Length: 481
Image (cartoon, rainbow, N blue to C red; front, side):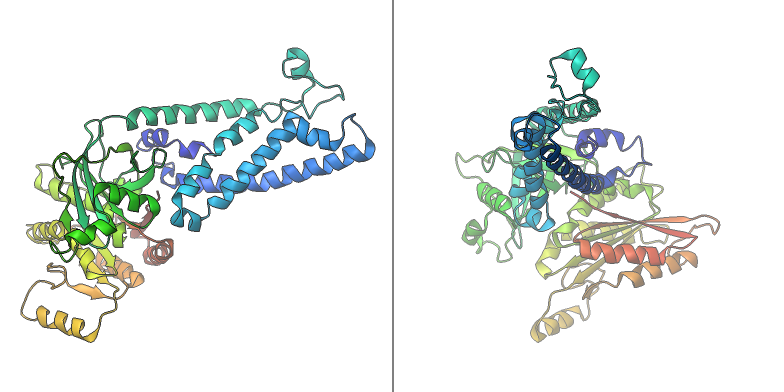
């Protein structure tokens, strides 16, 4: 039952701050490794049974033929049911299927319920016993005396019981009052949903599951919380890339077809959805919040936040919290520098958090200690024609702000060179030009947090390993949902 434990999200959320030495943020990775091990031992176990069935036919040890044992007894019936469930679960869990049809992955993964029931009853026919005489599980003493190795039900009860408790708690919590207060459509089919849920308490960097019964009663999809606890609402940003997200946007009045009606209001495609007379927003159900590596940003001396496209959403909550905390009487003491790196394919995406970034940049430059608390690095990977490039150059002359982002930090073109960035940061820390007050005998902790594709994650992780030395330790985390 180890395989279901990493999916007990509420238990992990409760355990996370109490057992930081456990890598609970890698629960999905652990879940997959247990699944791979199960697949291996299932092949061994099933192959051994088929060899035994061949021997049963050959030597006729038992009065039944192998076909009867296969399909008329509990062991054979439940075994084949579990094999069918595993076949469907494993094939639809492939990352390409998850990305292209999350609903298929979601529904087939719930075949774990008949799988667990089959596992619990798999040995009730007393297939492995020390006698050829059959025994029923209701034959009490004889059953427990002659049946060999039937002890797995105890572990299944413990794991299954904990998971059942976790799911019941989620069912109760998700039905608490939730109300949509605002919907904003952003460029390139991104929709911001703002809602209130008085019972929900969260931390910056956490995420949640969202369900819209009007779209699908059973589908739950993960989204990062983009608001911060200081905001009077909770917000998520949804990009329309799948069936569920497109249907959700249509239900909210911000779908791709509906956006054409508002093009004249804002050619860039950013506007607030206004409710007509008597119109109501669809109901939402929220399951969460759940913990993420981004919660620990404030425990580092230096934090590097990296996002690609919509992957910037986890850092919106973190950056908002930093803004409010630095204005409060008790600003963060351990966190002394933040590097924010945002990689986008198009210029319009920079508009999502332009106001927030401008406020943070002004606040950082206004520091009294001489250090710039926040540095913003924007990268544009879009290929531009000659006229657009010339226009950007002309608008850059004689101004202290970038023409694309309206920030003092200039936009970089192309992909970031992460090894150069990390090594440059390390060298600056070592020669004390990066920030003041470091002691040469202490080790500086640099937390690198990334939300985006796995290919880029591998490159960033490799760059962190290259830059790590005895005096400066780069720790890498990737957001998982």
